[in-house]
Amino acid sequence: MAPARVVSRKPGNTLPHPPNRLPRGSHPNPHSSANSTTPRNMGKFEVEQFLTHLAVERDVAASTQNQAFSALLFLYRDVLGITLEWLNGVVRAKRPKLLPVVLTRAEIAEVLRHLSGDNLIAATLMYGAGLRLLECLTLRIKDIDFGYRQITVREGKGNKDRVTVLPAAVEPRLQLHIEDVRVQFEKDLKEGGGYVTLPKALALKYANADRTWGWQWVFPAHRQYEDSNTGHRHRHHLDETTLQRAVKEAARLADIKKHATCHTFRYSFAIHLLEDGYDIRTIQELLGHRDVSTTMIYTHVLNRGGRGVRSPMDILR
Image (tube, rainbow, N blue to C red; front, side, top):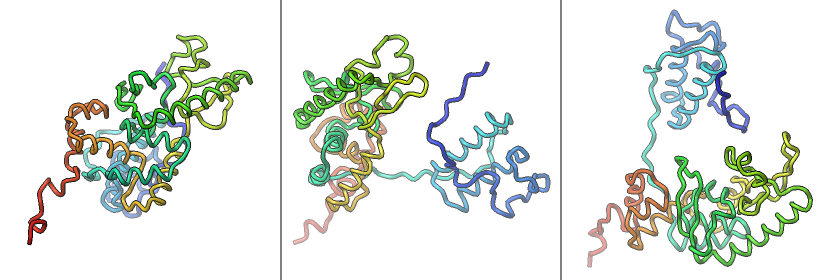
């Protein structure tokens, strides 16, 4: 038996438009099935036309075209059971080479000043430890080591674990937050809840681990939900959109003109470490980059002007 396909739990049509809505006049091939607009009666030619249309006429981003490409492959291969030939006639959208947006230390402080509660602690960790959004929100209690002042990131990008720094500046606030989480957890236990989702098959390997303190989220959701299979009451981690909206609003209140997002904290972490003289290999390990060339991107946006050059205008008398 073929293994079950794992698909996103977030429903909705994410294609720019469905494959049976090809633009009019896009069937110059006399052998194409232009008169039948169902995906089953289309094939390699129509798919190539559709993907090329996205790149050339609609000027979509490369990620949007790739998403459409993957969705169509899934539709034909896994739903309709049709194998498409290699689509080498597609004009691919070009991925732009963008430099990361970085905030100054003063701008970081101003954004943080407009955050509070869980959002402030999470944002402080993203900046102070170089965490990605979901790496921060999926931290477990056992991943925080106050003794060694370090954070263990489990199954980060590329399914790799890594260790990064725990900022001393956030320790008192984080400890108080964890105490509050502990009180809520104990209350959930008394009420028959206290369950948390474990990675992969650990629930089978470690009995009752899904109700132990160490596996609880550092940033649990404010509401519980009931598992439809077991009937157990769980808490998910804080939803990422909650933090994203809070950071966006904080940047607006701070009058930041740059496009500041949650990931901007991670970019700024790397740049500020470079400015402080830390070597690129250390920063690579803290960020969890597989290739140092990825980390080297940050050297291009150091606060030293374009390419580190001093403008002749600055030495005019």
